[in-house]
Image: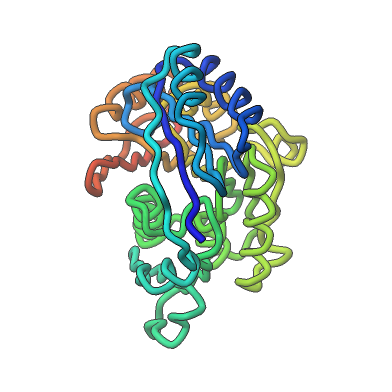
Length: 290
């Protein structure tokens, strides 16, 4: 049976969140609602609803007008086994020594690689995005240059693939955090699937805001693969949470946003070591002075 989606865009976060709440009162009501910032540097927000029946076009038009949004675009979505489709479409990712794969590709693990199992059904980053690949490649370079992480954190961890990468090549435990409760549950499931229980601790936190993070700081390596503005907001805490000489690997940054992020971090004493680009995305490797 087909389902329907209805999406719109608007420039203000508060209005977008309010419109998302207003969608809940529609008849037929949506089965799910999403409100998120578009990752193109435009500071535009997208609001979407998912419906089992075709939504009321007049009601959508009135809601868009009331909240200053673009007209909703309604699409019919055919009945598809999306998990099966993703499994077929997603091929393994090679990032330096790391091999990110789904269980359906378990027979393809190259000899001598560091395998990281991330199921296609798991949201929040499978390793195929340029930001995740860039961070894994930056981790591989640090390790190849002789760096050994003894106290590593991944802030905004999603699937925990970066933290698991560090825990797979170094002996000391790693801590990962995410603001999203579901992401933390996904991270915990992935840690178990990769036999890393006891080596990777998962906590729910905004930034460094958890006692387990503050107790373990300062770190010698911190990953933060999020978005430009959260990275900028995080910069003072990042500087405080890194030990002198400690590294930060940052991504979720578009090419045109990189200089602004670099400037903010360098103003906090965390200086650029290397800048790498995959497609439209940039990964920054920085190091705290000292």
